[in-house]
Length: 246
Ligand code: SF4
Ligand code: SF4
Ligand code: SF4
View 1: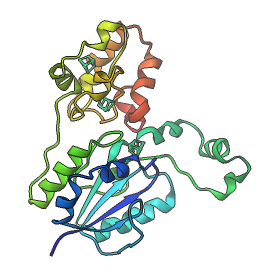
View 2: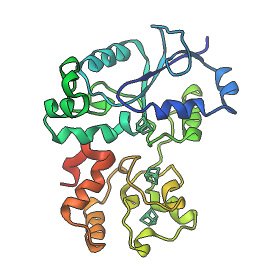
View 3: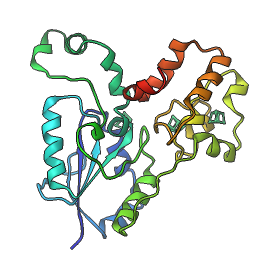
View 4: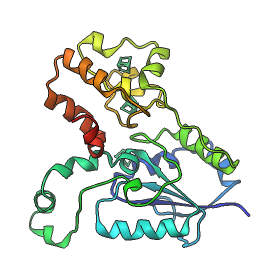
């Protein structure tokens, strides 16, 4: 029997699910080893029976908490995918405002029809078995993790900072160009794609295990950032972990 896989979405842009659909070349081999039984972005069929649940998006409504608990009861493995699901991501930017103000700003007079609570990662609502970081996820990483799980292995989770891959890519460090970067404390695995593309790392893959946040703050201060700027930079994707750098 092939394992049954379900993909769910909560509060997010669904870009991480799109990354799964972008695995066009690898999908035939993957589908030969598993059955996708629920995936709203890709198919109309649904099933209440699944072994592995991939979850895109943060939890930001009470109704989502109920659904998540039901998913946890049904699935043998629950795997959040992407910054929204793993960290809360950009959704957590609203958390520093009163929720009624947030609703009004977004929906105006229709705000009374909607429910919102401070956004949180999936792991804050239900136990998880693994996670695939990134905004969006790296599709090759999704395929690798899926293959490792299907082979009965504990998937590999990168824990080197983005700087390591940035050096391998031969990039000039953005600090030497007058910019700032969260690469020294951010979990690698993306091949430093943003820096290679001419931008900087905003920390979408979350922090590494045991990050040296104080050293990073010192580097950012030396680069001219105020304490408020530093918190703002960290908070773009990691606002739910704010206690770490405040
Ligand atoms: S992590 Fe990024 S790409 Fe993925 S759903 Fe959230 S906002 Fe979209
Ligand atoms: S640009 Fe960023 S990721 Fe690259 S080496 Fe410098 S600090 Fe590290
Ligand atoms: S470089 Fe930083 S912001 Fe860009 S994908 Fe990698 S972890 Fe995310």
